[in-house]
Length: 498
Image 1 (cartoon, rainbow, N blue to C red):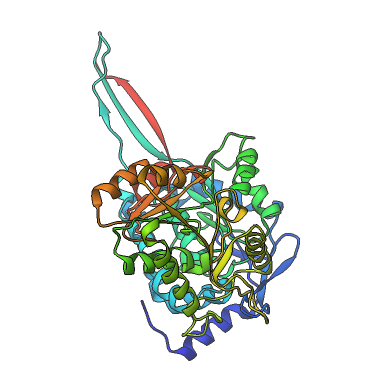
Image 2 (cartoon, rainbow, N blue to C red):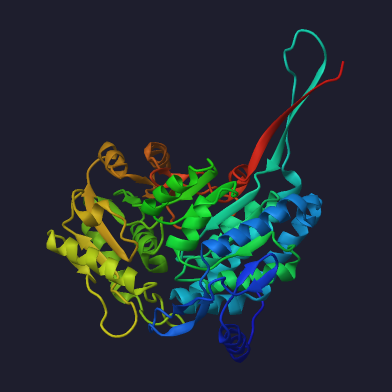
């Protein structure tokens, strides 16, 4: 990653924020049709960072038309697979080269520590584009010997790009989620209308600038900032969008499905989670404690895979809870731009009130906080990292996704008991298992209904590993070969040749 001096980085970010951010439509930066803008805020202070164009239905329509033209008639559809791959690779390079600036934008807009933005969000986003660039020349079909009694036939399949894709991304990992969505769509030859979260639009706009610099043709990537209930809803329902891909809450995911029914567009969803993190009594205690703390406190608990239900076998329960609580109390909380900060603010006032409400509800229902349990007074959207005990499966804090740094800890006795309890949720996104007995670990991994199971680790992601959920955690997979399959249609061709 290129390293800029602090002054260079500050100047680049200040210059970027100086003027209102516009929409990217058909290769040009334009104001919203209505002329409206909205403010994006620094969650560490509540102060305005800048103004962003407020796109709505009219702008979505223009963007979709541009994407349709680009898909049907532009250089993108006629480009060789290797050339398309080189452009996507170049975009990954540009993310690395501008990594310091992107990291600061991500931290200012989202609140996460600058150390996390630099170490995780930026390199993982670049790696995703580099990985997907390699797939452009490897999207292939198959030939088949068919059993027709008379005549000779050549039968084969083709994988073709699905067309115009609408993509709606969340606020917890803004740049990385944009990469997860855009990488496979661009690699397969689709064109895109991207709608960033209204809370964190800045890095997506900067990514659009880098995409044009990389050589992505006009209309292939369009970016419409705006609100979910206007721009997002219009994109999901648009009759000329062939596929919608959404990451966000399960509640909104269900609305996306309803909106997509109009033209039966393809849908992929990466939704909520209430992930179980299971510690057996033969686990390495130090590793399990560190892993459990990372599972819930990473990114302020604003992770769909957050290990928010901690199950510990009875023998180790007190020791693990004590360790995780001690870790929570040591976390240095502050503005994301402070290099010493380990946990920044929650993303918005709305999210702040939501998390505080869950903590208060848990305590009211009888839970006890062994660490945290309160908001932090003063400006900014800060809460204490929280560990709750004396909880049970009927409590709201155990059943529902909080999306904050709040973990509920519960003891268990046997493998059969924990397998049933781990699956006692509407979600099925991820899980963790901590034990020295790998046979037991794999047996439990097979029984847990989740798209990802980590054994003696947590929050490990790679562009090659497919990611997605069971049950109400979503449809389809991000990353890996599986994601490419969801951006293509399979066509069978059968020709009589004799």
